[in-house]
Amino acid sequence: MTPEDLAAVMSLMVAPGRGRRGSPDEVLRHFGATDGKALGLSLLRDAVDHEDGLDVEMALIVCATFGFTMGHLDLLVRLAWAGWHHKHEDVVAALGQLRAPAAVDALYHAAWWVPDYLDFDESRALAVKAIWALGGTPGDKAEQALAELVGAEDEIVREAARAQLDGSGRLREVRQLHLRECGDRQLVLLRGRVGRVCLFRTTPQGSVQRERAAREA
View (cartoon, rainbow, N blue to C red):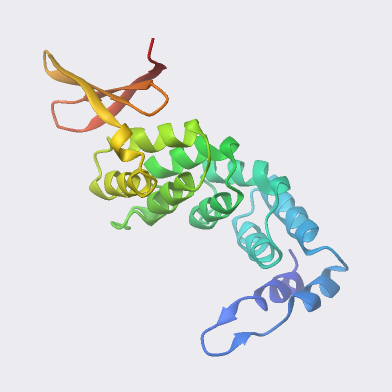
């Protein structure tokens, strides 16, 4: 984006006590556009193609102003996995608005992953937002992802997933099936409502790692 483009987009940001400096219509006129959703999608695609973190931030402001559509889904999923920008929280929040089952893997990844720039964040805000998004996503795959996150080592992640399951009454259906000693490890199986089995490895240090997931015979 040019400096003029950046200034136009930043005018959409709400300043405390002052509101926006610009208006959506003014931004559309600046870019010579009539469709704000299409403009946001175009800016986001260009930012992703060039792997430009600042342009991603600006494009997401435009998208948030005019709205996200399913046309944004692929780009948002790519951004959820990408390590070259710093807007993962905004990305997973947008995916939460779309409520698309196709985004479950990306959201699950975001719930486990701590980017280097968020290493300071003990509140695990990215993970919590990703888990909220999973909680609003329909389908068995999202439910299964939450069931696996209940076994996370991190208490914040574990309790956020538990809250999403409990809020819909699904926690009662995610139960421990089997626990047995295997030398210096334990294998814990969790089953969700659809009968899917998740196998986790509990290491000697006490951390829980997903080993495999398969549908129960």
